[in-house]
Amino acid sequence: MATRRKQSFAPTRDIPEAYRRCDPMKPLEGDRLKHWYVDCSAERGAPHFVDRLLTAVVYATDSRETALGRALVSGHRGCGKSTELHALEGKLATAGYRVVYVDMLKEATPDQYDAEVVTIGVLRQVLQELGTRGLPNAGKLIDGVREWFGSALMEKAKVAEGQLEVGGGAEVAAKLGGLLKLLADFRGYIKRTSQDKLTATVEYRRYLKELSEHLNGILVRASLQAQREEGTRNGVAVIVDGLDRIEDPELQREVFIDYGEFLATLQVHKVLTVPISMVCSEHHRTVCGRFGVAQIHMLPSVQAEMDAGLAKLGDIVHKRCDASLFDQAALDVVCRTCGGDIRHLMELAQEALAQTDTGHVTPRDAEGAANALSRSFALWLGEPHYSILTRYAERNAVPPVDDQESLDLLYSAAILCYCNGDGEPWYQAHPAVRRLSAFTDRVQRATGTQES
Image (tube, rainbow, N blue to C red):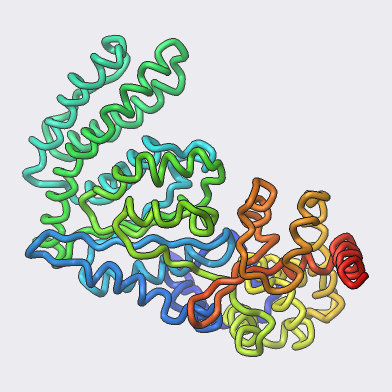
């Protein structure tokens, strides 16, 4: 039998392999995190970012009082949150926690997130992972949840008899499987049954808190079991990624404010992502209050226009790709144009690698990649956007959250968030946007008008 060749993580000279390694949609985790991770927290103006999250959980943990650690994380899409959270995952495990990484994108698309989708999605993934080892002595708790589901929801939501199966097996694993299937089936039922959808949804939300209280009994038992059998002295810690992708303001308020207590009271240590617009708005303090935290930890972009930031961005590429693949001048173009956004750094590196026909990336290839990224912004930017963007041609301490057009610019990273070492944020138009003639023309006109 042929043995599988061990994967090498050393910088590669092979262009197709380098292209694959620069996949912008794959956060680092596992061995890739171990070999390719570069700590840019100081160059982001957020020193020791992961350690600060770790401290927020560890310091709040007290097994004598069953206290729960918690932290909230934000930053625009593509800034590297998922990679940093995977780094946190390893540190939490080392600190004695049983870590469950919950990716909400496995549950639904962000425009479908609401209170019940998020709450049940988190509970389902936690129970699935912990349930792979079984939950001894938890059978009665699981049966109690199913019985409550039958009496409190199936009847009051007027679900027709036989349309949902509330039974389970005799074994704990079967009981747990039956419960998870019931949660999924009920959610599917209210989505496809138009006649009863409104009634069922109202009842489901009405009893969501009670459902959480029932399921918390299982989570507490699972945490105790992990402490006894796995030696994880601090119980279960859940990292919930993907919640920052909720764009609809109404859904944001529902998940983090109106029903935030359901997530906040889950009986596990927790780290959750939050949309950047909620951090930069009047909702900031309300969200902090719902979750009982002093702040939402912001992950800013790497300051690509500073020598130290430029060097760290180059290190990220060189961890994957041999230095011979990029002329230094070409790498500088790639790193400066990404604006410190890690996803755009990977996109630019891929595009430059795809354009080269010389065996290495030249400044011409890098310029072609930069122009491609600029064109991707130009395809959707309109006059209302450019009117806002001109205010961010240079550093601006005022966050762009006044209206929906401003929020669109923040979500799409057309405006990037940076941070000084003292924690003060500031904002600037993305370098790829600042390359557009439509942008520079408006900036020149605005400057001329001010001078006149």
